[in-house]
Amino acid sequence: MSFSFISRISIYLSFIFIFSCQDTISSLRNNENIDSVDYIFKLETEEYLDFSFFEQYEDDVIDNYTYVASDYNFLNKDLAVLKVNNHEAKYNNIHPINVIYLEESLYSINKNGELLKFDSNNGKLIEKINFNLDQEKKVPISFSLYKNDFIIAFTSGDVIRINKLGQVIWLFENQNFLNTPVKIFDDNIIILYPEKIVFLSILSGEIIYEKVFKSSNIIQSSGGKIENYFNIAFFILPNSEFNSLDTYLFEEHNLNFDNFELNTSLNNLKDQIHLYKNFLVYFDNGNIIHTYDINKSKFVLSDFRIKKSSSAILFNNSLISKNENFVEFYNIQNGNLFSRININKILNKKSKIINSLIINKNLHLFTDNGEIIIFDQNLEIQETVNLKIKNINKVYNYQNKIFISTEKGITYIY
Image (tube, rainbow, N blue to C red; front, side):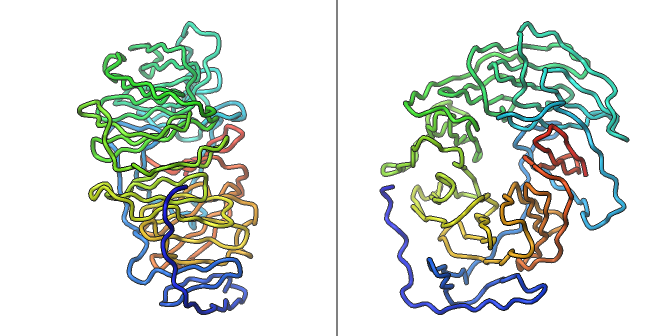
């Protein structure tokens, strides 16, 4: 990387952690630095982790990027949990498929491209609907709702709009491998093919705009990434090309990235992009933060490295990182530490962070091992919950529900 490092304070004090049966938590907010054997943390003293809930959705629109609040209480053991076998197979290098409520029923799509209808009261399969696409293999990559219809994208590159009866409204055919869930934005469907971005009309399935971004990089199996800031779409293609487009004018959006160099190693599976207010974060290779102020057209943080992170997610104005012994909350604007919490006796050392959600004004941190840590707004642990669900690959929420998907193709609905 060619960025200059944030200057570090040269005077620091050792911070002594006190442990008891419940004091495996080190919730820190003071004027000192933490000397942690290998490196020094600078504590945040002026800002707090933002617990605000930023909902970005349209009525009657759900896709892989939808995030809508839920008030589910995981501490109430009497609340019902539904279990549906919506993929009917293990996920093999495929993104988990959404489950969606529509008119008192549950819908999803299985590994063979069949529309599944479930009873929303007990999760039992009611019907399989085959809409007879003329293709040998119909492996879905995403399942979305638009008004009362479904938008289904397949790894073959095709995208289709059908109604709940399986009747085809339109079919977009494209012989280009697709491994990124499509995004619905302003009545358009944004598709990230390996070296091309395509905008489709959701009304007709016709191409509105497309642009190729060639690269010599290896196509990543995890697909691309996409976020939008008002009318600007920021995206990483599966070939690791990073760019942005004005979705009103359909032309490239200029950013002051003159010296922006990314780690283009053979494996960029851990790259993430994230938007918080006017800040664009590129989390490179799972351990380097670059934060760009869109309004001021400049970086506020460059080449800030997170050490010993086994998993990490971006949440509001923070990056939440987990290693074997600690969960760390970093300020994305300056790299300072909101808090560092010892989870030695709380979480499995090998578990990975899957997602974080604000539920009932508390931060819920989910791991792939079925563990949940519930934090209050001071980042003190209030409760821990073990869902007894293993191999979780996605946690998402909308329609006042929380959906937990597993690698076996099962979805639990809370």
